[in-house]
Image (cartoon, rainbow, N blue to C red; front, side, top):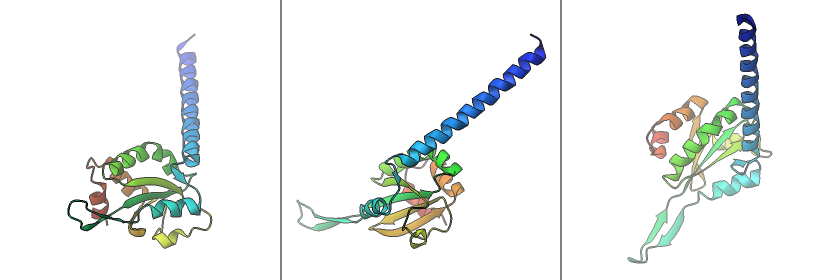
Length: 165
């Protein structure tokens, strides 16, 4: 075997590895879109948004009524987009940041039947929508801005979202 043959073999192996890597990403993104982490129906979306309803409770020590604010995040994205592949590494980071503040997070496909995303203030995909007490609080649009939330080392994701314009 001479040097040219070795070079050709190395290029073939590299191309096969790249192809298999892309197939793995596509397969994983498809599984994510089919998982329970992704909202696929109007009923699922409405039920998840309903979990953001504030809860009132009575403090046993003082007898005063207090209100517990609830917040949920929904990331709307096209299931066939590159963003869904990127969500494979972004979603766990966002989920961890949300978990640190008792915030639930789910993905939602952009074309849910009978759902008008304009009702939630969404103009482009992907978008992260913050719901508080079943109302839209803030919409973060664009892959770059959502990426900034992921890359920021601050765990206070609410503060980061509020600071975005």
